[in-house]
Every structure is written in C-alpha cells, then in structure tokens.
Amino acid sequence: MTLDLTMRYAHESDITKIARIYTQAFPESVEFYFGKNEAKRVQNLMVPSFLVLKNAGAKFLVFGDPIVGYCCYSVEDNKTGRKTFSSASLGYYWQSLKRKELQIHAKEIWKLVRTQYLMKKHYNVDLPKNRGRILSVAILPEAQSQGIGKLMLDRALLDIGDKHVVLEVRPENEKAYRLYKSAGFRVKGSTRDLLGCWLIMVKNPKGES
Image (cartoon, rainbow, N blue to C red):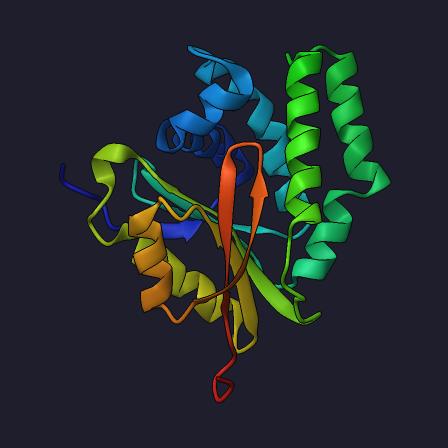
C-alpha cells in the first residue's frame, strides 16, 4: 500500500481510530479476553480507556492519513500512572457504565482485573522513579514491516528525553522485540498475565550501561 508519511500527535477525535487499530493489530488478545467477533464492542470499551490515558498525560503519536498506526507513551510514568487510577478517572468509568456506554460482562472484568494482578505480582524489576514508558505501539497488519514503528518510536524517545524508558513486550512478538533492541532496549526481567509471559525491557540514559 502507498503510505502517507504524516506523523502527528493525536486529537481526541482520533481515539476511536486508535482503538480500531489496536483490535486489528492484536486480535488474539481481543479474542482471549472478550470472545470471537467482538472487535466493535471492544473498540467501544477501549475509547474511554485511551481517553483516560490521554487526560492523565500520556501522549499518542499517530502515523498516516488515514491513520495506520499509533504509539502511546508517557514522559513521566509515575505521574501518568497515578492519574490513570485517580478517583476522577475511576469516576469517569463508573459514569460511562451507568449510562450503558460500556458493554462489558462480569467474567470479562474478572479476567482484566486478574491479569493486572498477575502483571504486578510477577513483575521482577525494580524500576527507577524518573522514567518514561512506551505504553502501546500498534500498526495495521497491511502497513507493518515498512519502518513505521521505528519512526514513531524514535520520535517518542526523543520526546521522553535522556532518562530510563521501560516497556513490556511478548517474547513471541519478534518484530517488536527486534525493533526495541535496535533502539537500545535490553531485557531486564519478566512478568506474566493470563495470556503468558512478558519481557520487561529498559533503555538506559546515555552513559549508563
């Protein structure tokens, strides 16, 4: 496909497209947590989650017109994490549920809560307080292997600056692993969730081995 090379920060109006890209890039995760043929419902569930992240300080880079990929990252991971789980953010979810904007079943909520619990329980790396984080990178299947991920990652790392940067990646996601390794990330540990193992990768500041 012929790509438009536009890269910019996402607007709130782009969030629905970003959610759609996520479900198409990670169908196995969508099916495991929500079942088959549920992509549209999952997109509707992810929109408020991405909006909460954005309002908490996370940044979204989007690539292409129309958008074919995104990179979500946090310059100050501690602050973003606190705001994401603040009373205001949780209240936003609650109000969305009351208005029946979010269609989610009790079993699905249990799976999501359980997977977060396992991620924290098995996280075996002590992270520095002053750090950035790559939260999510996704590209439409038909636009993959064209260097888009590298362009977005390079821009995100430039914005985060000279500090520790952390991310998690599935070991079977070989393309993503190679990309992160080429950018200077190294495996420092692991964790797991209901779907299996995650590698914890960290990029050190310049001058620190």
